Image 1: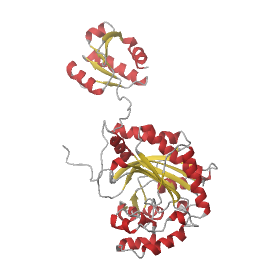
Image 2: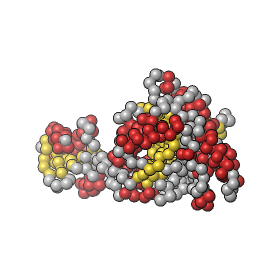
Image 3: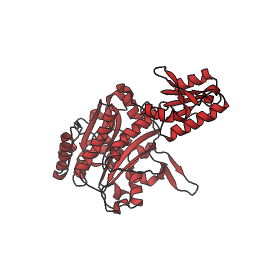
Length: 420
């Protein structure tokens, strides 16, 4: 047992469970790759100000949850708590928006960090797959991203998730709502920190999960009553496109999400089998974020889906993923000459695209066959001195138990044919 353990609130991915996480990442990214989204990767840490400006100084993420550090040169850095600000920063830095092909469509996968109270489904280190479409204001783009996320979840076999949908308005109509909401909130019995939030970003108060706060918000003014005609029309377009695509959603007028940069379309994927941490992903439109971090006006939309929470959702529904086999052929040599000969066969099988493994360490037949069983291999190759003297190896079908000699020179072709 090592003296060291993973830090509190984090987790290690180890086989065989890690295969689920790889399968989830693959399933979420597959529809994106088929829809013109290119892969982007950004550093694990950024300038603190990128998140303070983009995510919002009033958010819990910035005020309570960011891991920050000071470099030897005195710079303030933060481990990235979310992906959108980093991806947009990288796209601007690389001038991707000037290539003449908008929107810039990007997808990413990585680890993110927030200092939170650890519990099931909420970690201090977590994994997400995200997508961003930068530089175009179009309800079709909002609908596309929601549809692709829905497609990804359904391809995994998930069925018991819900899509919550709302509009947060824009810079034209939201200030009027903001003022009405502030007036309402100032008369409530709230703690000092929440009162401070009223003045900075009152919509965040609507996102407060505490029952005593939610009880007082029953008669709060509704954003839908303050949407301008343009925002109403935009939102109706998104709703109509989702309906036409057969994507079921629920209108949720209280949905604001936890980041300051969202405008107009906002959405969340929730799974009721996960308890209090029911959100498995979400996103929305962020038309002003580029300008907030010093770039030009680039209306954009995106989402991030939690890999760890998606795995928990699969477990809650009892979905067993059809994971690729890690080993199709397992080679068991008996003696030094067989060791060299079978290792050459294993190398050739791998080059032919067949997953093959080897009984390392010179174990006896009984122990090596136990390892072959544990590997899940469909076929086992066994060879000793007598087999090699006859120019053959023993090929055993681990499902049927049938075993027979195959010429050494033909074994790769035979296995290729059988594994098809």
